[in-house]
Amino acid sequence: MIVWDIRLPYALMAVVVGFALGLAGAEMQTILNNPLASPFTLGVSSAAAFGAALAIVLGIGIPGIPDQWFISANAFIFALFAALMLDGITRWTRVATSGVVLFGIALVFTFNALVSMMQFIASEDTLQGLVFWTMGSLARASWDKLGILFGVFAVLLPLSMMSSWKLTALRLGEDRAVSFGIDVRRLRLTTLLRISMLSALAVAFVGPIGFIGLVAPHIARMIFGEDHRFYLPASALIGALVLSMASVASKNLVPGVIIPVGIVTLAGRGAVLPEHYSAPSGERMNQGLRIEHFSAGYPKRQVIDDLSVPMLPRGQITVLLGRTAAANRRCCARWPG
Image 1 (spheres, rainbow, N blue to C red):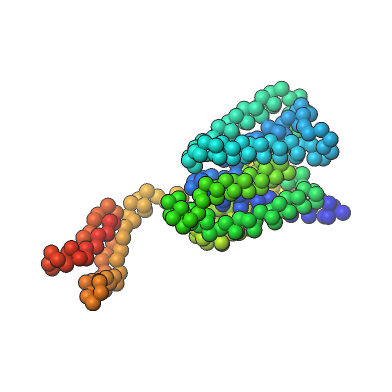
Image 2 (cartoon, one colour):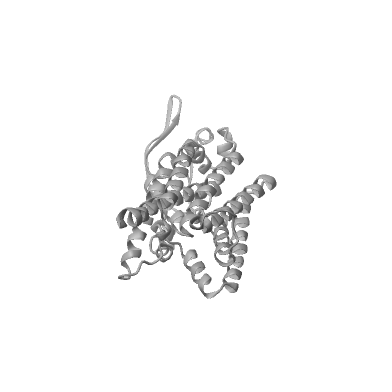
C-alpha cells in the first residue's frame, strides 16, 4: 500500500509535472522570443503562492471545497486569474512581447509583496505551512491530482503539436510568419492560454518548482534544433527527466530527510546551463567565415568555379571582382566575415 498510495503517485507526479513545465517553457520562449522566459516569468507562480497564502493563513477560499483540495483550488484560481489578466491586457492593448514580459514581471513583484505580507501576519504554525508550500514539493501528490493534470496535458499536447509548424515559422521572425499567412497575434494568445493552464495546474498541485521550464527547452534546442515538431515533445520529455532526477536527488542528498524538490531544482540552476550560452569572449571573437569549393554563375556562363578561401576574420569585408566592369556589374559577391 505504501508503494501504491505514496511512492508511485510521487514518482508519476514528477514525470507529469515535468512534462507540463517543459512544454510550457518551450512555447513560452517561442512566443516571447526570449531564451530566458519560463512559465514563471509572467507571475503565474507568484499568484498561485498568494492564493495558497490566503488559504493557509486566513482560511479564505472557495466555499464548499473539501479540505484536501482547499489550498490547491485557491492556488489554481489565483494562477488562472493572473494568466487571464495577462491575456486581457495583451488582447486589449496589443503590446509587443517585451511589454508582456514587463507586465509579467510587475505581477511577480506585486504578488511576492502580498505573500510577504501574509508571512508577516501569519502565526507560527501557519507560517511554517506557508513556507513549506512555497518551496515546492511532490509530497502533495495523489492519484486524483495526477489524473487531473495528466488529463489536461493529454488534451493540450495535441493542440500544441497542431500549432508546431506555426511556432517554427514564428522563430524565423514575425514578418516571415505573417508572410506565411499566420495570424501571429491569435497564435500568441492561444499559446499563452495553453501555457497558463498547464502552469496553473502544476503550481496548484505541487507548489512553485522553478528552472524546469527554463532548462528543458534549452537542452531540447541543442539536440533537436528549432523544428517544433520535435522540439516541443523533446522539451516535455527532458522536463520530465530533469524533474525525476531532481526528485531522486531530493531523497538522497540528506540521509533520512526528503528535501523539497523545488530547492533541488533551484540549486541546480547554475550547474545545468547550456555550455554555448557561456562561451569565452575570446572564442566568440575568433569566429569568422570560411569558404570551401564555392561555385557561382548565371545561365550559360560559369563565373566562379571551385573557390576556397581560408578563414575570413570577423568584421572584414571581402569582395570578388571580375576582369571587366561588365562582369562586376553582373556578378559581385560580398561576404562579411
